[in-house]
Length: 249
Image (cartoon, rainbow, N blue to C red; front, top):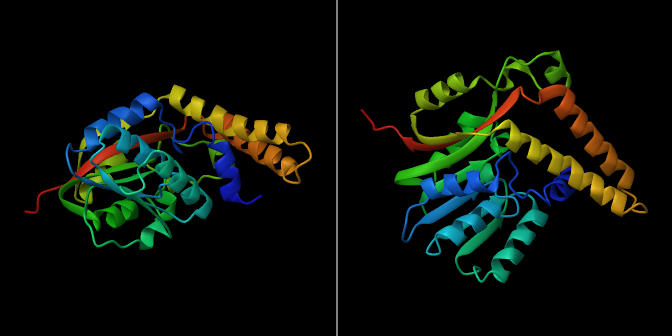
């Protein structure tokens, strides 16, 4: 069972691949999306959940989603076709960092996908190439709620992997972006996400005892649960920022 299969099963009950609940996703999109005709790009779209939510809120929207997971893109295309959105949403199987388009976009979304670009600032650089004048980026990434201790580092993190929230925002602003809205995920949102991630993977394994990947799925769920509960719970935070470019002097 490869990483993408594990992720697909683990996110089956929490399709937003980030610690955000439905109300938070709705509020963020409502702030980000213009009314009327507009274009949206999701870099690292997974199964297209952000695009589906956006289309439900703004039916006039035209959108593109990009992800290198062919299975997730296939799921996204089926969902879009079933919803009658096939002519308004296009999906692309490729590295999000290498995506090109003849269009510029009013909103670029990249939430929980900074690893695909090498970090938060490279994500903003990549997203900014696709942004129309006056457009917005909705980006979500981690930060340190508190200084990571040894247990967090033992879970696979490094001290310099993230900064605290204030420093994270300082770095974003120094890079030429102005926050116009933001959301810091609560501990309850984190817990709901992690219980869903580990629980759905465990449930799949228990429901398929004869499957050759059952043992690996249970091991992956246990390792993730251990890293969360004994490592980064309450230390790793998540912030979603709505950004616009600073005016050129």
